Length: 299
Image 1 (cartoon, rainbow, N blue to C red):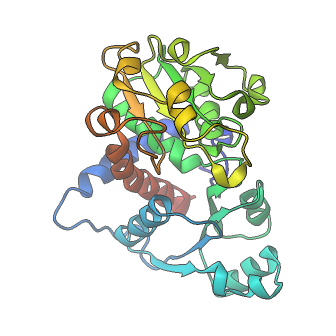
Image 2: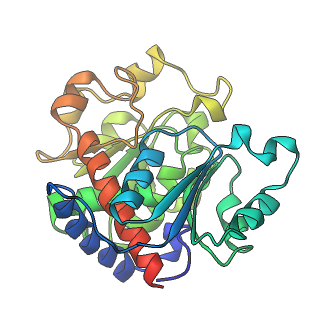
């Protein structure tokens, strides 16, 4: 394993499977009364989240605690970045305190790679702009694998805001290495440049869903676009998943969503509560992030 986790494009199929196997072990541990190991005892992890986050940030914090690491949270609103200090200088100052890991979420695409090139500490990309979100893709793959047992020949439909989605990018890069057939669909303005991924592009929702083994519904990222996508009523009508639409997929199709879910928009409450893997994904996220942290620590 390399020093950092910046992109799923950097991972081989073998490395992805190794992380899934480790995540399986940690998922079992997380169901025990004592959910602790000493794998990262003595290591210091700084969670530097320059964008809002609930699931990802808490997932990393819990993962770090369960591995025995010392975790510190950087709050950008009260940090020296508000006084004009550059991101690189902020990182170098914190690194000088003998920090071992940076878990970075940033609003600029490429920020994680930029930081990783300027520090000997391990850097984990927790989402950088519209670029990538590798641990989300890895937990999605873990969720699929534990239900399907294999990736080859699977048909995955990714539906929604493809253009702005770092989750879509990370999943596409990883899935293509694993033999997964990926098809994409979303509002026209959210599909700009989608052909660069080399995936099948569907012309309507029913076509995208038909026969799919896995459906990944994406959140419309209102913070990254200005009126480009119809929302919320129009979106639900043409791009949202309901029970009737789901019936077109494979009988045992999985429904995933990276969260937060806008109920009644990307999917109905019926689909979310009765058919989706949303809460299993959150559980698997802690286990996968434990697997990533331990693997990088051993590098």
